[in-house]
Length: 123
Image (cartoon, rainbow, N blue to C red; front, side, top):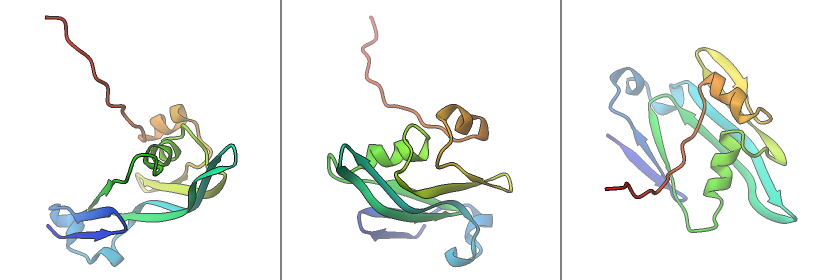
C-alpha cells in the first residue's frame, strides 16, 4: 500500500487489484470539487478548496480544531451549500453535480454521512 502526505491530507492507494493496476493519473475520478468557498457571517471558513479522489484511493481529512473539517463534510453531504464552487460525484456511471442538493436527495443517490455519538448504556 502506497501513501502520500500532502498539506495535512494522507492519500493511500488501496489494495484493490482492479483499482491499482493503472497509475493514479489514469484512473477515473469518483469525486471532485473545484473552487469551494464557504463563509459564515463574513468569516471565511473554506477558501477556494479543490480536490479529486480517484478510484481505489482512501483519503484522510485531518486538521486542527476550527480548521473547517466539519464544514467541508457538511458541504459534501448537502447539509451546507458552498458560496462558490462545485462538487460532483461519479455514481454508477453517472456524473452527479451535488453542490445544491439536499441531504435527503443525496441519500437517494447513495451519498450520506454518520455522526459520532457518545452514549452510556444502562447496565
